[in-house]
Length: 256
Image (cartoon, rainbow, N blue to C red; front, side, top):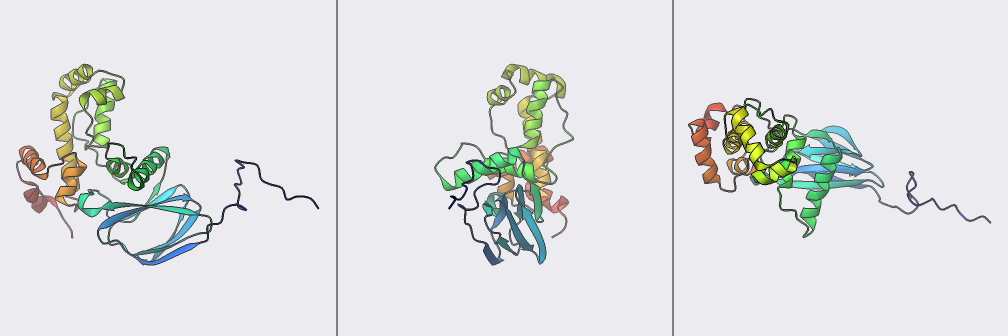
């Protein structure tokens, strides 16, 4: 009697004869104080979100704001990985359930976030801020600020526009674009009329204004734009806008 054929290691078809992950269903789910990001790492899952059915396929993720009712079934031999973002410290413009395509950069950040959550391997960087910048439908980008024209300085500016809370030093930012801190500083002053520090503060405050109008907690906004002290954030915000964050919210925030 012939022996059964054993699939070669690394076969494109995988090894279903060795993998057995039964379907899993969860009903009546809701997170009161956390936003939820669900990454379909393998296979597919069937969701009901606010009463609407949807399918999440491999290579995609689903953002569910806090207090969004949902239920789902992870199909056989599929893997769905959850990531949680505390409302109290998460500032985002995402207020509705949002489907996201997971590219290589997001995949790397997701893995880094999960690694830091479930192990002692925790890079000294705010991974959540980087994830939010990539998944927001309208990223917190500042278009009104003048940009330097020197390529290396422009790359630094774009990096800070992408992630206003980026806390790397001038030397670290310059090294990331294969330049020197002196070259970057000179380019910003000559081509924007501001030092890099001044430009960076304006960038952070303009981004903070967008986030405050998006019904986000003040402490979370301060963290998102790079301030560990909310009182320090308030002082800088008032110096930039001529009003406190509370006055700004009362004037510009609309809707519930």
